Image: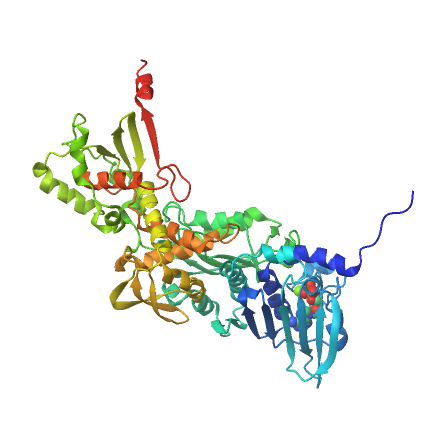
Length: 600
Ligand code: ADP
Ligand code: MG
């Protein structure tokens, strides 16, 4: 039998290796930014076109490369950072594998200009699919400029696999934030399609966090500081009242490298014990310094995971330090008017369970299960009316007042529904009874309303008397900006975008002025949450997000009429049985099944 084994040509091997290093434009951004940091740059500029699909360029003022190094840097396993395996245990640089540039050059059009400080001329190189197509001397500033154009141009399958610009931009901004938070001492800027998204000056950590996340972050931060023999911790946690519904702003850096560590995250969360509402996540920016010998960062190819020698001790120190700081700053609950307060657990709940009131069953005293069916239809309000749900929504307190005032006067109505625990509606139907989840039902109604509005050609918008300006972080502004035309086609009218604020002069009719901020904030959270794998359909996403934000929540009492409207509107939906996020909205119990319960 003849020999069949062959060595893969370099460019094929590089393409295969590229698959591991480069998943998407954000991976290129990460590698290039890290190279610039390793080169000792004090200022780094990132320029993008079309979410990095057309262009990713990084310009630094680092030490630059000689002609030979410039050429060698694109070879696989070419690195200036380690010389022997032992060096791996003493790493102070971000890169060390010598794979990134070789991989990137295998799957894109790459152009590099680089110059050493004491040289007069630098080197200009162009590479396509691992082949050098151009090399000349050039006059260029000290440092390196690397452009990566048309990523995956020679691997159409990978190129087609890329997500929408919104999603890919989000990934890039995540990387940019991680790297720039790890190095507040370096100035960074980010330009996307000729917009300046970030300009971060050389700064201290607190200012860097505020520069990135917006000025409202400043008041939220609680400083963390501790030094032991095993490690030092510095950074900030956000006060518990600013905890987020989605995990967003959670950053761990170990020796200036962003890492993900569910274990350390647990330590932080447990330090907040009793201070967080259920389902909310604390924001934090924590910097751990440990001896390089005591960690292994090499266990994951993209290097965001880390293994510590003595995890248990780290856990304990971290938890105690944060607990102590939170105590010192005697974090008291602060009112947040954007939240649905009816859902909150009081902060002192764990200490004084006796103060918590037991949920009551709301029973309508006029409920008469024997009333005839035909009488009830009088209370029907069109679906459109429920869309502007505020008429339907009364806060719990108002409602209770209302109930005691008008208890006696209530007219005998045809009562077809009964509200249970301010959460479910029970309604009798021909074949038995149906139990409806009120919040999910309302989500479905609103969702279909929004989709209908979106698909109708003529857009309705209500002009605000006074335009309102809402401040956001620049990343959030970038996301809203990327959704601008989609938001406009559902009825938003924008006046002005600045780096950290947006001015709105009109909204869809179903979104009242008081809800604009929360609607946009939750949309941003939902968009970010969806980034990793789901396909992004902005309209569907918006409709889902709006519906969820604006729906009546569990804990809201509904009048008889409101209950009936909701039920009627639900059953005039196209898909009344499933919530926009795929949960069952109601369950039916047939008479037979009821009979069965009683053994007949
Ligand atoms: P690694 O960073 O793992 O060493 P890379 O492929 O990312 O591997 O880079 C290869 C080499 O090219 C680096 O070791 C470094 O010597 C050089 N290099 C890359 N980018 C820069 C830059 N921006 N400035 C100076 N040298 C650089
Ligand atoms: Mg590198």
